Image (cartoon, rainbow, N blue to C red; front, side, top):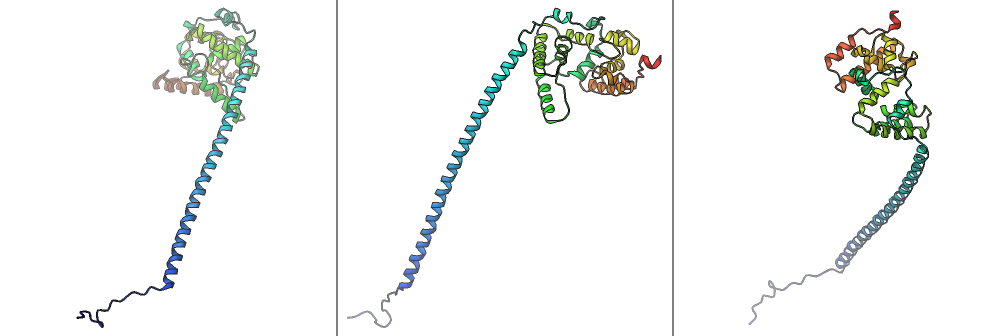
Length: 289
């Protein structure tokens, strides 16, 4: 007995077209091709990055070698320059410095007003009590300034200025600068900061043929240096920067105001002292006579 209905329950087979098979194969090929291209690109990109990385490392290595070589050569040259500059240089002693005093009228540092000493530190060497004869920050700043600008800026500490005034000379040379640096460091080892201020103020030039604060105080104010007030101290210290310019009262007054501002900013004087000193009527002896 046959239970299947030939008309309604016939098993139908799906006929698969050959063109569909070919199309699917082509699609798969394209996918594989794209995958291969993508993989090849990734490999190529990876190789390129590796090559670039190696190239950069090679360049950096070469630059490092060149830099170290230059540094070594500069170090050798610098050491040779220092050796030549300090050759036959005398040992720095307090006696040597005193033997080279310029001023014939020397006053004890204890008798010099504190305002005079503070004014000097504020305008000439604000880190005076922190460094050991040489202010590296100020020195580097002045080197950069002088290299990249048309103007010159000094980086000398008070000790270095003493060396230039009493032990070396005014030559603008590397040799003199090296000797001043060396002398300043040695000076700071054997002389107190207070004594260093006294040496400077007793020998620096104030104009009007006056070396040292004792003579300068008489020349400008007709007074003993011990009796100078804050306004006078600031004005007198200001003259040392450029005696030819600041020995003129109008210019000296401008410089005085700058120094008083610095003293206030660094905490050497109070706001009240600062304001009162600005108002103080200070006259030069030459203007009265």
